[in-house]
Length: 106
Image (cartoon, rainbow, N blue to C red; front, top):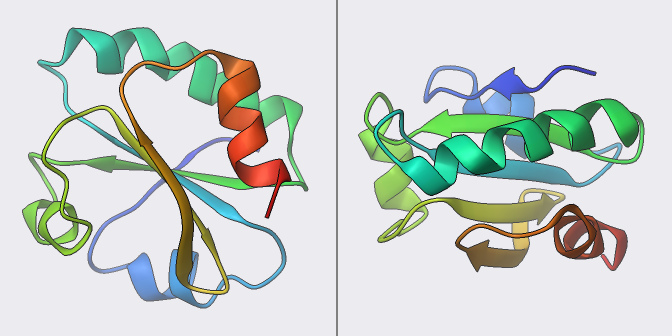
C-alpha cells in the first residue's frame, strides 16, 4: 500500500476512524534533509507491511494545524496511533527495524 497523504480534511476518515490496524504518521517537510533520508524507508515500510500498518505522510508546512495538534517541535517525527490514540512516537531519523518495532508492539 502506498502512503496516504494526510490533511486536516481527511484526518478523521484516514486516521481517527481507521480501526483495522495501527496508523504510522510521518511528519516531514521538503527542506528537511533527515526527512528526505527517511522517506524511502517509510515508503518501503508501507509496501512491506501492507495490512499490518497504514502509513500516512503529513507535510508540516502544508498542514500546520495537524503539526500543532501533535505538538511537532522537530522533524522528522513519527507517531503511531491505534484506535485514534497515540501509542508511540519518536523524533529523528530511525532505521527500519526501530520503526517496525513502534507499530508491532501495540
